[in-house]
Image (cartoon, rainbow, N blue to C red):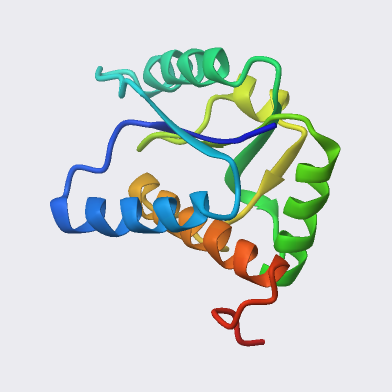
Length: 152
């Protein structure tokens, strides 16, 4: 069983990329974690861009439980997220957290998702969404192990 972060593109700004990589590495100490970056699509038609990126995302999630990170998704507290993550790990099935590109997630990805989670009640740039998710995965690990990082 593993958790995947399936994301569109890479983090371009060096300082932010270092912080994202740091949290993903910390999270990987608690969860079997794999990060998959799919190619960012370019074009004039946002619908075509989102569709192509969605196809790439779905290719990487095959056989796993898909969780779409979406501003219209469900809100969880850090403790509730940690509890849910632990149940997922115990369930033994691979889980793919999906973050779309600059134009969002394709409808096909949203429909494939077993759950939609919001990382914030407002729209986040996809690179910042990746940072928030990485930090929350790390935080969830510390909560499950009752380590002092999380202060309620």
